[in-house]
Length: 152
Image 1 (cartoon, rainbow, N blue to C red):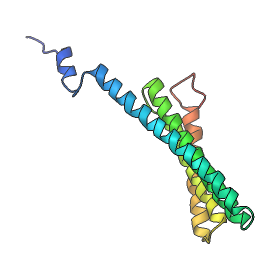
Image 2: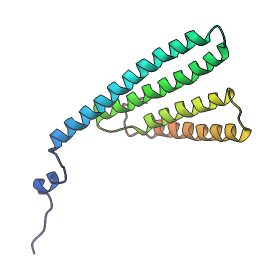
Image 3: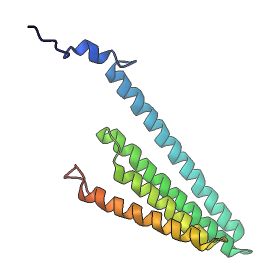
Image 4: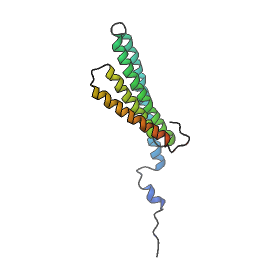
């Protein structure tokens, strides 16, 4: 009886459109361009935040504060997205804990935005419940992380 083996390297490389080395370079370039785009967007968002605060300060300080809080939370969420992309470039995969961090920042921002708008108690309770579940998931990812050197 003869055995059939499927360890031929040429069949594995046929699944790539590009050579795996080129594929890695293309993905790294695209992720780097995405990071640069996010940095530029955050820079202009920060400048816009300062201009808005300057123009709203004498007349409606409360509106300026609300704008500042929501814009700062969006900028923080963008920084977390950059952390996800950096993680992908450095270790070649994305950590679930980083996605949970982004989701927590965005949802906490939504909860804070309820403070400045009309809201129902149902929306607040639902947001708090989702945030609580995400916190529990975040703690579980820390406890059962496969990376022993990972502190995130």
